[in-house]
Picture 1 (spheres, rainbow, N blue to C red):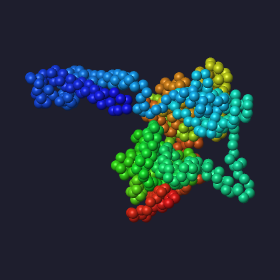
Picture 2 (tube, rainbow, N blue to C red):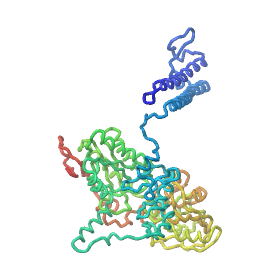
Picture 3 (spheres, helix red, strand yellow):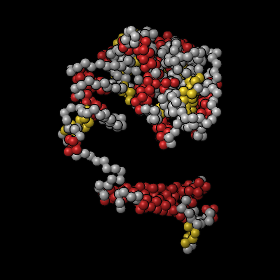
Picture 4 (cartoon, rainbow, N blue to C red):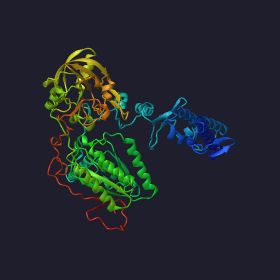
Length: 633
């Protein structure tokens, strides 16, 4: 059989095996049930043997399973066996076909290059980026072209390509080193041959950079300051403008966004569509990327010129009602999803912004992307905006004062969780608040407490002392000076490198040198670097199970239900101080547009949709009276 043709014989063979198995299950079941009249009339007769339609088994199973479960279970085994047999036969026939034609080009003519071809491509030189190995020679690329390596996590990209390149590259290099692994492995060697700088704003040892030093005094002063401000306030807008300038007006651009993002007018002028997260806590990263890619392909395939309707809502959202699984915000997002399902929108969503930032366009906003219907998109976006505004009073965090939370925890019989949203590292906080530990001590809470804190100094002291040692150490207030260090005499229970993987997304965490210390009734996980703490990964990785304690402190605004709330007796959102407090009035906003709810309780709202269409075509309909057309004509 030819490798370039549809394998009808193989397809038919597999189909017949599956059909035979199902038909056999039907006939066996009919025989086991003594061909009772309730099974219905046979399809035809072969002598005295009634023959039923092949799928009749499934109808009978649905109707009579409760009367003869063993018979139908055996029949199911007979039917399923056809699937296994067909898979085996399909594999065997494919192997046979592969052996028949070794040089088939069914899926293209790609193959491994020969030495002559590698040499001709210039990949056997002594300089350049390390790509791999051919026999006993390294493959290296030393040209102006870009090199892209695409492979799954932990498949060897770093140790196979990046690290060898950094150890042999004679020129300068800028390394985007999110996990810090390349710095750890190569910085020492490269420092022997030149200057090496670490730029990590969250690391006290980082090199510093002041963009204002780039401002030229004199006639360029105002322009330079404006450029610096634009880049700092709206980097995504700057990037999209640069992409548009580079690739031109005809290239469609679709972006994917965190629902906590700040979508700006500058960004909307450059894009053709967008996809927004639908879950909080976020679990739909891959799905959002898929939706963005699908939208982009739809725009390309059908040569669409989408219109984007945007309605800004003067409100900041926080609290449990933002949880999409069971909160008001989830209900509004479901309405947006329904617009897509009904064909009224290519994409729709509501972004609630990030209240811990302070930018001119910080707010809540409803977004609808439509094919051509400007009025429909504007009305749909206005409807979503009205829905979220109507529930604004529910979208405010319900907080408990620290002293009251301690008193309530003492009175509670079951396990308790203290949610410290104000020091949530995943929201941008430093993670070094010791306020709740102090409150529990001062409030005489005597049961077992599990806490977490980011304090490189305390972690270093623990590692220097070693497991089993008892030392005095200051705890907390390492980065955020509003927190005064708490001096404790602690025993070092365990030490680790601070490595873990998030429970849900399986992304790697690296908290640096980490220690578990105990003092009085407290067990504290001390980390050197801030990592995401919205699940239990760091606790578990260091041998700590929150269920073994009476009270657990979690530095995250929310966690998935099964992690804590499913078994905790109470979960208190504590009104502790911090840079990501859910008490939004304490954050000191100065740049965002005012008035804005809940900072100003008497804020009013009336939808004013704005339309964006990059390549606007002449309209045949009636313009929406409240719409300002944005973007280049």
